[in-house]
Image 1 (cartoon, rainbow, N blue to C red):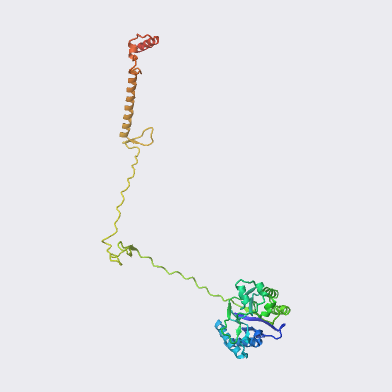
Image 2: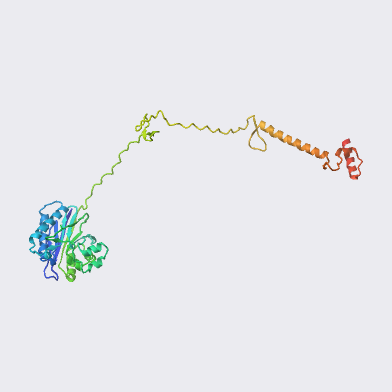
Length: 402
């Protein structure tokens, strides 16, 4: 719940010849929930009349609602009512001298703060420690240039055309006046709201106001006096302000968190089979296609013939009678294979012996050359001219005799 805790105001004429500012109420208590500030436009004649007329009309309209919760629609209806009252009070026929004023209105709801404004009068929201949390945006040409990035805030502060408004509450206007409405959804106990006219902003930048609120945190009257003193030294206009210290308890309200919804169980997808004729899915148990009427029994999908099994290699088992081990191989072989190998070896040896015998019988000479005597001829016919041959012959004859 949000309530008024402390309240402090000032409304000063300054260096001007008359005071066109208006604040309401001048004093407030715990049950007050509506606060209004206006700045009459001196260039349009009787600015003080316009500011008081609009300010009081808005305040009375909202007060008689006796609403537990003020709404944006109520703010707009209050503005329409104020414009009607302003037209009644406007005694000037010259369009160039129409009455006009700015407007800032604040309403405290149970769990939110409603802020509406037209023109360049502002509303600030500071934390209990003095930190700037929110500020309204002026309806002026210079503010629009800042928003578009054409100039900076520092350049806007000293800009010669910063008081030229793009929107204000005016009598006999051709277009419907639009109010900008903001909803402040967060506030803590001790937070401060500041409503002020442009005379305050002529003297103090936002950073200067924030510094004063920080230094005087917890002392609303000292804060208001410090701002008033600075404006008295530097402002070139009327300067007025409303300081509101809030008592916030249980704000923002705790909203019960709904349990996360559990996803609904999804039915299992039904098994389907495609139609060989049209390709569309059908139930597995269907005998005819739902779409084209094709019979599944007549054109059942051909089944691919099974591939012939690959024969496994026969691994010989040691110890079988038909297998024997060779000394030069780790793998056993069949007996028939063994005898083939053995026969091949014997045949090879016989061929080698025959070749050797042939070579010995020919004496190792070429057939066209003189044949050398054979070994037996050397033994049986010892008539050789060579002494060495005689000795060899004698040796072999003795050997054969033995």
